[in-house]
Length: 292
Image (cartoon, rainbow, N blue to C red; front, side):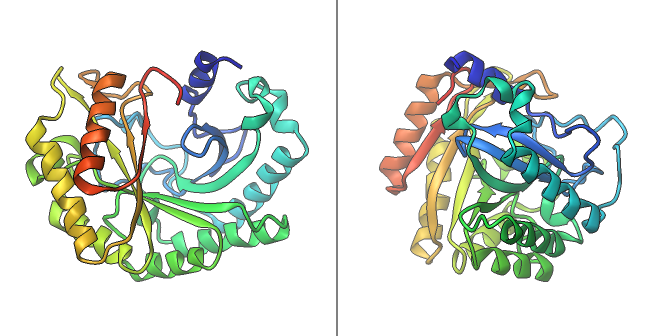
């Protein structure tokens, strides 16, 4: 499979598979293989309204509630579909090279913020149970989160359960200042709350930060904003927050807002290098028009 075809397959990021309500497979360039998504927000509930989001929140949701028993059965079925090779009998998975067919993780993501789901803890337990049944202890449980609800007791219990096995936490941080945060993420949650939750969680549960850099109406983030972002990272580090690394990316799938567009590879590389020089943190970049 060529790099162009891999990117095209990644762009096919539909959160539906046949008649499944919550579970879906994707080709993940960050995980570099197959990721089984768990959509805990079929109602599209989210704390953020990011300008780069590709979720259409105007159309009615297919389902408004989460039934954990059904989610559990869908996870079992999806892992069987992967393990017996049925998944690779259809596009876009049939075109994947063997090196990309490995099942990398079960990821709590979907059409909103997974930690807003009141059954988050139970969903973690369901994924844990299926991982044990399939004897896949190395299969990671991944949480992709905007960090706004990381302080909730049920979420903390879910994270502590994840910590007992292979896992990763990917917390979103797209800004260094409140003004830019509200411009990009358009959230009612105060920026200081997001920073506090990331730091408090990182103090006992090491995590990765995922950060989107993009153009708004043709304008990239200015240098002062990137330096402010670096300052926030250094403050977390100096206060004992354990940041494992950074995932720096730009727009790869068409957002709902057409004026939100991707940075060039060169621009993203330059920002990545600047952040590394200022913070010393390891990072990976994920380009908008090219597979990496």
